[in-house]
Image 1 (cartoon, rainbow, N blue to C red):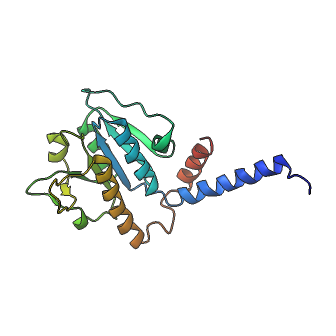
Image 2 (cartoon, rainbow, N blue to C red; image 1 turned 90 degrees about the horizontal axis):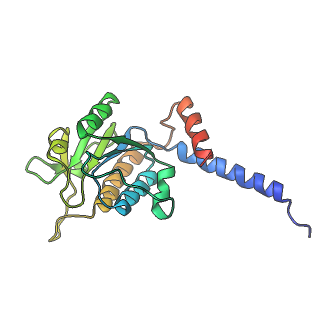
Image 3 (tube, rainbow, N blue to C red; image 1 turned 135 degrees about the horizontal axis):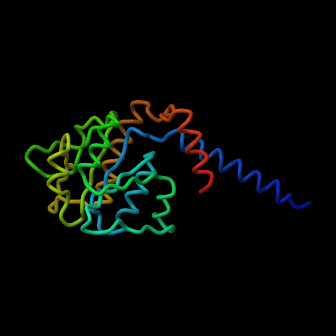
Length: 205
């Protein structure tokens, strides 16, 4: 039996990769995003990015107000998800929210308070940004006050808190559930121009 032509094999793998990229981009959700404010642990942020990629998020906003530098994310493990999710950086939550609202997005922040509503009562099929804060101190007061609403993830345990990356994943999969039920993954949400630009971008990764 003759050996396979390595060039043909390479072409075959390239076509498979292109089809994978097309399939992924067809389900990207530009109307859904995550905001991460002053996340301390790069591993938590990497895990959040991995969840974002998993549910089809196109872009994530990082807000670091100068008290700590923007984290450095490696290329290995879950951090590799940064290759597939665009990252926008902001130096203030005000600047970030202003940008999101120009895109028509509602801003919902995670905060345990009297006015907070359940994650499951949010309409996550509309253009929306979900905001998550520092692992130890939570979101800044400004982030919660300027949000359109604050939400909680219902829990019945003693601790009443989740790791920030877990909280992000739970919230995103509720958005995924709602959007899938609404058929928002059935047709591409990207314009033709966006699709082609991201296809070229992904192909170079």
